[in-house]
Structures are given as structure tokens and as C-alpha cells.
Image 1 (tube, rainbow, N blue to C red):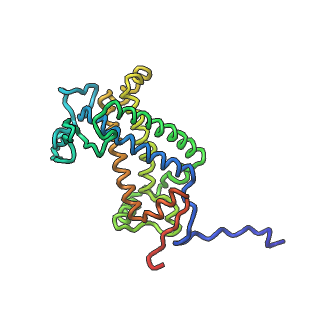
Image 2: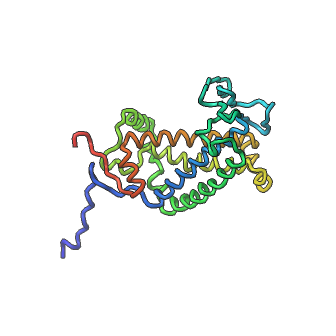
Image 3: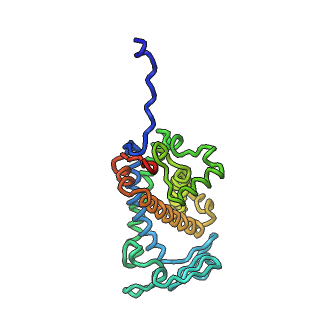
Length: 275
């Protein structure tokens, strides 16, 4: 009786080589929906950009206004910076029409502004509706507060520099530590959830004349539709950077284990060297 009344001991921490449950089903489903919708929206967005490959700040933006970004044949200008891009940006494919982004990077692959808008708007629903549901689940389940909110100690410069140094040396967390998000992951995921996603959706709405008429505060919020288009493009490039780094980390950390965890939720904790 005495033994039964005693509190049970806490389970020992997981060790390298153990298989643990890492990702809840809501996270996994939202991840793959996002992967599909972002892939289509980025490529169709580049086709839409091809219709006018210039970006502006302020309330005005047309052919004879001063732009901060231009893509012209074989050339990229960002402010005072001029970058040659022969064969990469500013190309003339076999169809004979100049485009800022080449056919392999766009949906549709041939110049079709109307078709690109249809793809873009259709998959925008697939981005926004599941995103709102994931937000609601994340707060209600306390996933955001428990797993993604940085602790004060993690935000200290010394801790941030240490984590950056570990990643540069390809020294990833092992054992029990691999079950938790590190501070760089937290910053990246919070930036996507609460900066890039809201930014790209709100600026996308701002570029719609119908939404401007219904919500006139939207253009004022971003300083005009041309500014909203610039911010929309920068948010999209933020997604490209995030995806590139994310895929690189998956490859370096072990693609089979990482992809399996996002398909089944099960993850084998990395071992320490020499284990």
C-alpha cells in the first residue's frame, strides 16, 4: 500500500537513438498544405510580376515614375546597386517576349497574366483559411506559447551567438535537446507565422481595388498600393530565403529522419558523437 501511494518516478529523458513523437498532426497537415500553396503562389506571383518588373515606394508607380527595383534584359537594379544577370533574370525565351523571371520559375511557364492570377488567387485561399485555423489551434493548444515563445535566456546575445556558431559548425542538437525548437528555429518560425504570412496577405489585399473600396484603411496602412506591392514582393522573397535555408538544414541534419517526422510525427533523436 505504501508503495502504491508513493508518487511514480518521472520517466527518464530520451537519449540519442530513441524514437519520439515530435510533431502533432495539426502541424504536419499545415506544413504540407503550406508547402503546396507557397510553391504555387510564389511561381504564379513571379509570372504576375513579369507584367511590370519594377517596384516603387509611395502612392504612385508607373512606367515613368522613379522605381527602387528594376529587372531589365540581363540586368537587375536595386537602388544604386547594379547587378548583371545574363541568362538568369531579364530573359527573352523562345516565345520572343521579354520576361523578368524565366519560364522554369513561373506558373504558367508561358506568359499568361490572367492564368497566373487565377492560380494565385485560388491557392491564396489554401494559404489563408488553413493558416487561420492553425493560428486558432496554436493559441488554444498553447503550442505557440509553450513551444515557440523564446525564453529570456535564449534571447541573450551570448546565447544567440553560440547557437549561430553551432549551426555554422553543423553541430546540431542531440538527444533530449533535439526534441525542442532551438532559438534560431523559434525566431524563423515566429517570423513566418506573425510577420511574413500576415504581411503577404494584407499587402495582397491592398493591391485589390475592390478591397481598397471596402477597406480604405488598407492603402493608408502601407503608404499606398505601390508600397504594398513592394512589401508583398519582399515578403515573398523572405519566404524564398526561409525555404532555401529550411531545405538546406533538412539535408544537413538527415533528410530521411526529418521528412519522416513531418509525415508520421515520429523522429529518431540524433546521437552524440561516439554514442
